[in-house]
Amino acid sequence: MLKQNKSSYLLLLLFTILSLVGCLESRRVTVQVNNINDRVEVAATPRQRQRGLMHRELLGKDEGMLMIFPEPQEVSLWMLNTRLPLDVGFFDRHGVLQSVMSMQPDGGEQLYHSPPGTLYALEMNRGWFDHYALLPGSRLKLPYAMTGE
Image (cartoon, rainbow, N blue to C red; front, side, top):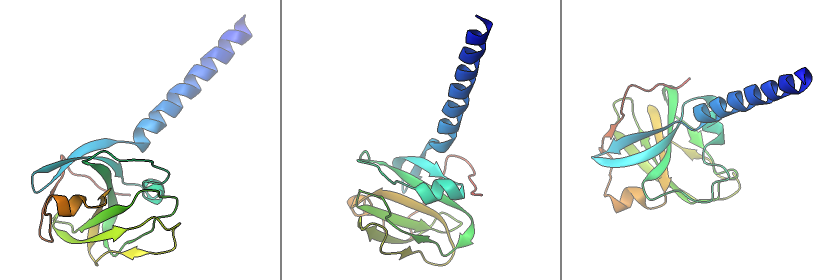
């Protein structure tokens, strides 16, 4: 009986730890671009940014991923194992949109390079930036200070 309780306790502990890790991996926040609310997953660690939106089958209308980099820089993104056509907006340290690029699923063959000084990359469904007429100069507003590792 004691051995069974110990096994049950260890399974419960493992499940709890995995659940907490899962919560950290998929932290969601609401951000705004020119007063348009977006519900996004935050990718602030190298591991989270590398995984990005891989293996997703769909995104909601105003859902996406906000990648946060440790410092302003030119970043390169790819579409490895990403099934959804996406647009990515590159924002500087002040939250100003610098450019938008469309990315097509291609097995990771093409690299998409941001302008120098990119601190945030916002990946959304293809056409999202056009739909809301979000052009360079649009402003990203975060719910609180966010930094990347």
